[in-house]
Image (cartoon, rainbow, N blue to C red; front, side, top):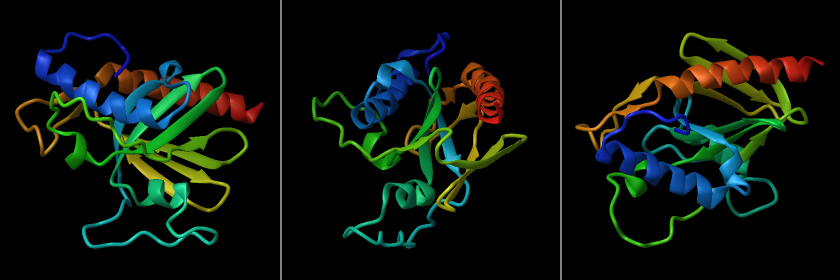
Length: 174
């Protein structure tokens, strides 16, 4: 969602709504490229997220692991990813309210907590050193249930993300 493409006003509003969630949740948000992904093993309707051991609610990694939809921020310097849950029902369809976007607790993925990664087709599986896993389904075009008439085109972003993954794994293996 960073790479410049020809987008109509409705699609730009979707991008802005998703970007607002990421920006509210991540420090130094401007230095990340961003794309939308579905988390394949995410929570199903009616499922609850496990409880964190030291707090009243789930840990950030548990929330990311159970999230159905994620914003994936990535940057090459320093080489890292940020996985940020997004509740599409609260941000789509975009509106013109000046209400602040509620931040989500993101999970940073870098050399200190990455246990493994595998990419096959449109899926990228990320294993963290804590044993938590996410399996991202990354599509070049996304049609949201909330805005079926306006698809999100992120094909160039997806290409850039796979290039980033090569760079990221080269950095990890050094």
